[in-house]
Image (cartoon, rainbow, N blue to C red):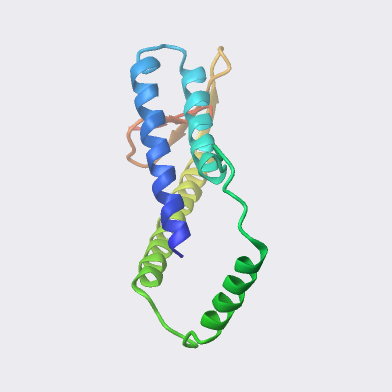
Length: 153
């Protein structure tokens, strides 16, 4: 459980570092497709980078007898642990997972509603190959996935 929080912290730090690099170097560029690719790549790398372990030097080898004694002591201590306890970290993790599940469901519902609105609208194509969708509801104009959605009003 604690490992997940450490991983989340490392991911957050990587995202902050990559965002600062993006803000300093690429935020004023007009190559929007490249900027999107860089942002998605930075997000993917920030999720994978904490999983990579770097070692600078090897730890000195321990004597064989001491390692065996430590293993036996650790096994004996681990068996005496209570059967079921709920820690604060576990409660925090469950709250975190519930929040992620809630917002994931909300996002999926939003995408489903958006797709239903675009399918239910009247499709008009222009000379440039742009697809314009005219919907009957009162919505502000927006574009999504190659469609320009406007209201009849």
